Length: 119
Image 1 (cartoon, rainbow, N blue to C red):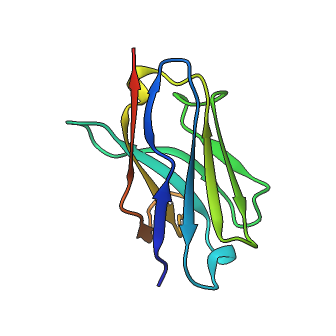
Image 2: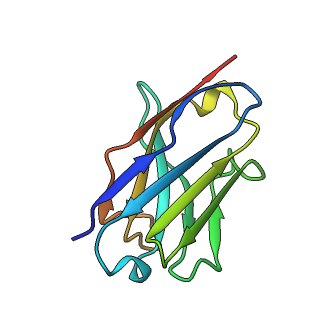
């Protein structure tokens, strides 16, 4: 069992930056691929970024490539999402996810943190 708690969301102007953090419980954090997803009002939840167990391999949705960076610290059981050059269309609830497979099926979800980007 893994519990995930997100933090770092908030309100920011377009062009600004935010850093989301996800703290995981348990001693098995390093066994899981981790990721971030988001869900905007009236839309389906969508993939944002993923990172493998070692942190050496990452993948991003086309919409955030070059602007967002995912990283992890296995010693601290934490995964981060650095978001730069934010756009109003990035407004969503952002969810931390653990135990991703190659199809981005998710084993564990956090409760989410709201990110709002004003124009």
